Image (cartoon, rainbow, N blue to C red):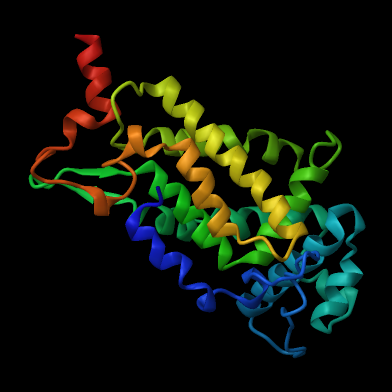
Length: 269
């Protein structure tokens, strides 16, 4: 059963970018055509840097890294390729810029975590993993072009010769280091290994669903994810741990015994 607090998200499709909304047509989703650039010759270095990065996101999302040229970027923002070299030295540097500044950002981390946080009557904080995962989907709905960029590069980077190969091969474990250190509240029976498995299952399901969403404009990403979430985090096991709105202060006045850290400490005694 869908978490009651999530139903409002399904009713909020009008606030999503047009490229993220659902249509009745099963056609490839166009995430890039709405991105246009003011072709000004004079900009501050910071403005030009941001413009170049946004243009790179658009072009790589369409053509991939192998198909993109620096001339493509220059044409998109209305400068010469020679002028572009004042800001970057190579395609690889441009790709590194996009990966470092465009996708796994502190802003995304904060968005995913803040509304997944629950605070008990003693002021202890914990995180709800199902809501955290749903927040990842909600954040990505606001940046469909980035989802296409990620999906394009993730496929290309299976080639060991690709400059982003190590980035994508190691990305899941890097993210797990961050996620695994968070103070999750969990149902009985979850240790670190099982938490890693359910997190890996959720992220893998999400990646696959995003590919289908990009390929079919009639797919509602959030609706499909919530259905997936009901399977990955079944109500019979996860009720009370899915969303901060489910927190019952009478039943769990203190969250500490329900955290992974507390269970590991108890097991070590």
